[in-house]
Amino acid sequence: MTLRRILLIIAILSLCTPLAFAQLQLTYTILDVPGNSVSTYLTGINNNGVITGYYGGATTSANFTWDNGVFSYFNVPGEVYSQANGINDSNQVVGYYSPDGTVRIGFTYDGVNFTYFQYPGALYTQPYGINNAGLIVGAEEPEGGVWTGLLFDGTTFRTFRKGSDYVFANGVNNLGDVVGASVESSVTQGFIRSKGKTTIISYPGAVLTSANGITDNRIIAGNYYLSTDSSCFVLKNGKFKTFSIPNVKDTFCIAINNSGVIVGYVADFGMHIAHGFYTSPVTDADFK
Image (cartoon, rainbow, N blue to C red; front, side):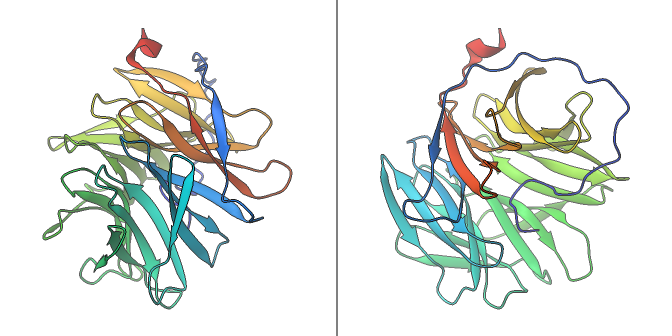
């Protein structure tokens, strides 16, 4: 799977009429890599407002961080493809790369040095998020196997699946709460995993729900499909609010920091490429 965190496995269409939830009144800023006509994906943001992401096409890409208007670019040595997916407050970036177009290997990057890791026996090791303690979350797949949720603390790997056909761990906060998406019997639902207990997240009427990011006060950001187009949800204490950028086909909300700023990307402004964006903050007051 090439697009991080968003499971491109469309579930069986629901016949339920979706409930209406209040639209968040957020402002947004488009942020694209300058001087390029390729897609830009914003995939992570830390609590200092530093954003990470990647740009390029389906088979080639380059990575960046963005800090107060300044882009810094990096590539993994020996890569044919790579994808930066998350960043913590130490500006440690996590992602994955492919040296040959087939296998995918996890990496962390501290601005100078790369560290590599691969789940034993996995063809794909795909990290998506990292917290301030260095806990990395993602997914792994052995060749011909199924995707399994992955946790890595820099020394020890742990996996979890619990009977689901596929599990992707997409984000983690500093309390160790993990959010993601799972597929079971062709139904895709989000989840939050806290202290070993998993709670399902399902946007009413949606054919697909994916939880992608979580703050320390447990505001969750993610995506849902009602039919074929993607919109964003934000969730706290069981209350959903929604957000979509107008006049585009799909809005993907990928990460959220403790200030409530969401980053992601939109698809199809009529030019058939993706554009990164970040929003004004979501706060607890939005759920009262």
